[in-house]
Length: 287
Image (cartoon, rainbow, N blue to C red):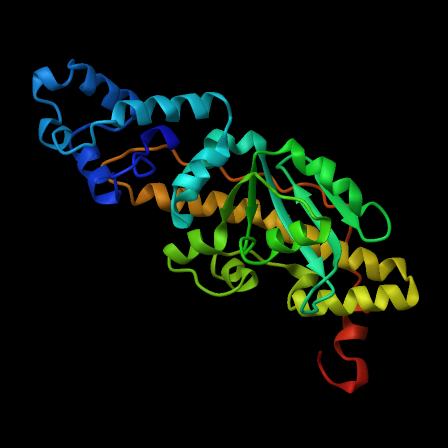
């Protein structure tokens, strides 16, 4: 999809992009051919071409260079947050789905982190292997989160005193542009994703799970927290694919093939129902 995109170029918005598509200029190569004169001589896209910025050829050359160099961050900086989904197919092999859990304070500590790249699940626990995250995250060029721009990434950067330079697809903005507002769990339900035994467990409950684990060192409590954290990142892939396919359906006259559904991975942990019920109804009332 990225090579059909023009709205990342200076002075080309979505209206002009659609005008290019309507004039049968539907890829970077189509526009470069037009600029070279091969298309313009036949009258292709001349009305749109006259309105393009004079430096568009250089901008297209830069786009091709950064795509070949796998520089996803360059595109992320130039696309609006709701349009970053366009990068996904080209950089999927370098993408990680990211989610953190915290102590829930005003200046939170990170308790667990989950990473999933469509093949491998990685997880990190405070007091065990959390520092390893700083090396592992360097394997990726794109991060997919939900609300990560305002929460996960800033918290990570402050906690580790690092800067995450990866491109960022925050599904909160992409899904909102599709009419799916609210938190991650609400969007999941609207898009047909069920949580099973983790239904009703949220970020506030994750804080309670960590507190209980610190108090008791009960492995089942930690595994329930990790199961919840990992479920988030696995579901992010599902949401990313669904959102991408919904977006391309609306791009007439552009015809882009949809992405197939992904096969869910084998999860390393299962939630402990007894732990959830015990904490949920501690003191005789729902948490």
